[in-house]
Amino acid sequence: MYAIASSGGKDSTLALYRAQQSGFAVTHLFHIYNTDTTRVRFHGYKPNIVEEQAKLLGLESIIIPTRSQDFDNDFRTALETVKHSGLKGIIFGNIFLGDVREFYETRVRSVGLEYHDTLWGQSTKSVLESFVQSGFKAVVTSIWLKKLDRKYLGREINGNFLEALEKEAVDVCGENGEYHSLTYDGPCFKKPLRYRIFEIHEEMENIFLDVRIAQKVTE
Image 1 (cartoon, helix red, strand yellow):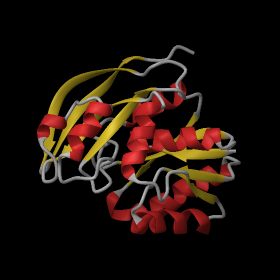
Image 2 (cartoon, one colour; image 1 turned 90 degrees about the horizontal axis):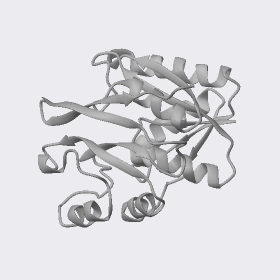
Image 3 (cartoon, helix red, strand yellow; image 1 turned 180 degrees about the vertical axis):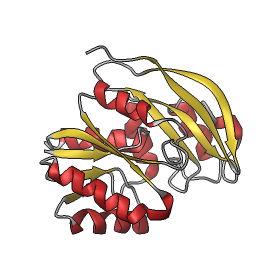
Image 4 (cartoon, rainbow, N blue to C red; image 1 turned 135 degrees about the vertical axis):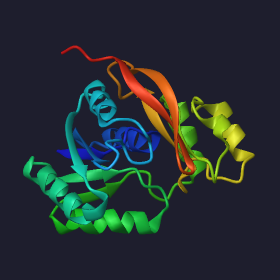
């Protein structure tokens, strides 16, 4: 049994789908969030959004807080929790950032867990095309204003979105931090994640949607 490392966005959701198609028994969603802001790093929404998404994906949640000033120790503790849950490894949605992959892979393997990246080495255009063509639906929840115009905040991630980003001097998957997203429906979902947007807030060079659950899953 495996966990998908996810912040609720498009890449990790597609990585989950690819893993399932490849025969991985993915039973858990593993997520860490920032206690400094009580929000999902870079995405801007609260961790309960990710927990709700996990339910809709038919997965159990392992959601653990981490502190910026002691992230390494907290992350290792989180990985130990995954291992003690009886899981064999963790699947990630990294695409081409070697330093990011090395950081996580080294720490995951150090506690005796397997490390897998099901999107690794593919072009980001092909990743985004596959996400859209597979039937996933997602919305842009944060923008790094240094890299991308605020007009993209709240945009649906679809073919038109890909075409628009290809005209910008950015990575179309946002691998350099240009934007982040929330996946709310697709082939992995039992039913769509119902959400509402309450407000827009800015923090330094970033702008975020305050996304909240509109309708929770009934067990």
